[in-house]
Length: 108
Image 1 (tube, rainbow, N blue to C red):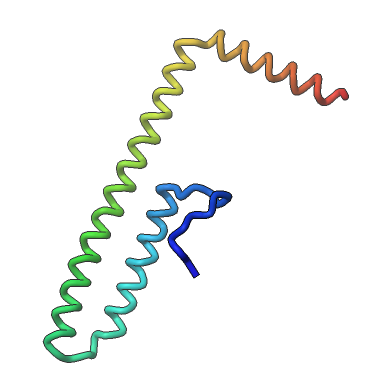
Image 2 (cartoon, rainbow, N blue to C red; image 1 turned 45 degrees about the vertical axis):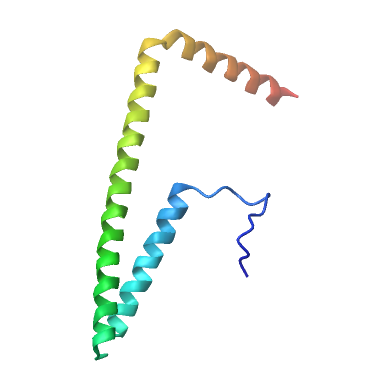
């Protein structure tokens, strides 16, 4: 049972974890809406309308989060590419040093 207290040894929660949880909630809520389609009554109709509005909002937020994550990833790739083009000899030196260290450790 979840207590709300976070275990210190637990992996940190990532944005992708939260997005996946939100996707699961959306799928479950859609299934609930389909299951209650035949139910009649003013309160049920009102509740279904509120849930539908919340789902539409959640879908929009998921799409926005996906677009934002894609843009951040592309920006990071561009920054790394620019750095590599501006400092090729530094990267060659780092790669050679790592190759040397890996080679030395493999001989032992």
